[in-house]
Image (cartoon, rainbow, N blue to C red; front, side):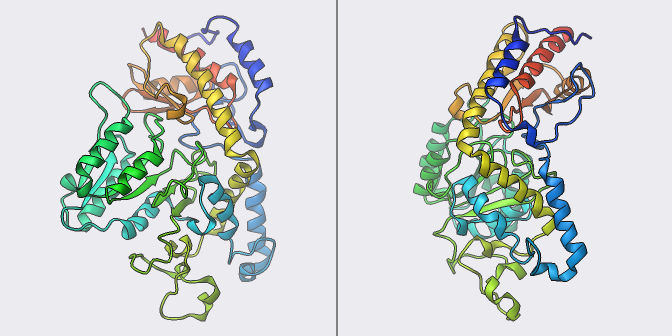
Length: 431
């Protein structure tokens, strides 16, 4: 095994120059130390799986712990950030992140729990209109969720759940094929629930076009934005999306298992005809402590809350959202496209002479901060060697896909160069 540079030319020097000219916000994050290779820090390219910890998180979390220690139950109403309205501290920034109105947005629960709560309201099959449309390469949790929803309604999930597949010989789902299906079969579709950015390929779906087509067909259109929130600019309100949900532990850097976010379009909030599960936090905050026997839900996404928010879990989300508010998604998207384009160029040099194939769309407008490679060998074993021999962390998906996410907040051009250089050496060795 060799860790000497494998990519030709002055690639490393060029990467250093680009980092000096186009820095991100790496100083705001803890970068894991490398466990192999010749550099002190890891080249961390797995932010599409778990984002890095912001340096501010520890102090912010300790402040919330101190409030508990010094105030006890009075912390609900006293202190710098009282707990009773705590979820409201996150609402504005979360809404700005996804292009929503504050009354359309709430941070609560985890992603799949939120999808189930939303489908209680928005998956209402009846007669021929009962199908749920997802992509064939949807994250497994989404597939499990929609199949269980179909069973809950007494339907056969093998018939009710439609998995749209790419064309033969292709890796990504064409927008025109989604639109054609909705035009052809739309009168049988109750719910369209696709991933905004596909977890496996990194493909950015045409959210506004598919939303228009789904709604024109008479279906409800929801989006799983686990790999889109904090990755690409979103305009959920203007795009007329019915509902959406996203997690906060990938690009949003709020920690493993972090709380998720929910969007419900303004036309739905306050609609008394919608079914919804309710609990303590579903009722209007102004009358919550009147202890009335019947809930009085507010005309906002808060009505989809069930339980009171976990304060210690909300703190890291608030810390992360403050970073995004300062950095701005427009600037982050611009750097993301430069960084991902640079990695694509480096990988082009590697794939030209080695059995690697980039399966992410080449059009920068059709992808987020991710390039997925079919590596032609055991991707899990390759990822282990990248980490332990080169200090590069990327993410493997069985059997043969390696995912690399140059996250614009903290990834560097040098990180990208290290991945390409390591792949060149390792793949050459395995040959």
